[in-house]
Image (cartoon, rainbow, N blue to C red; front, side, top):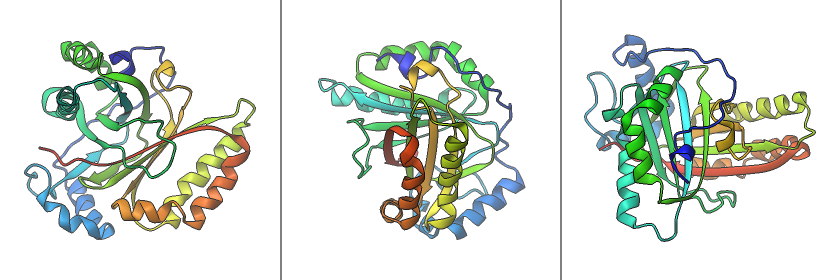
Length: 276
């Protein structure tokens, strides 16, 4: 799998995406960062992680504005790939925000999902771009080709989807990303799909320990998603909260809504690796 399956050169889906900037020093963002500490009690232990924070912004804080594009990449490394080469590739991806304009954040980690739906994939990366223009500019950047050359021979399989943010998102180092991609049956009706999406969106309000929620239809290259075009990302305080969520009655009730139209699912979880 080459970088066509990593950062997407393929047939684009039609989607209108807003363009926005991410003013890191705004007083509004500072207030949201502080309020997040009250919502997620675990964050008090995260000050040891990550690089030095900006004044007024807690350690490990990550942020995206409405209109940002989340590019989600799950990879399965070749069995013969050198471990050092894989680590170098992971670090190259993780440090994109330091080297490429318009890349706001890269959150990544090793798969730690207890569910049997990861297909042997080992890592997941979520790259946050300021907007579609920033994503398109990166695809034309020489560093894109350099990254392609670095990763091309290391991967055996990959899934890549894009989701456009319709609201503000905040998360922290050490939290757990629960990434769920769905493919529905060919005869699933629009109203059934909408009901499923609404049911999933309602889970964070019923389950403790949810810190952020992202959902949408894949707006990226259609030939890189393996048909898994319905995207949900739930951010939990930690693995314990994620583990409590899986058997929760509200999660089981969602399964009953999904069942009649469900075709395929892919799930990969990871704990966000601290920066630096």
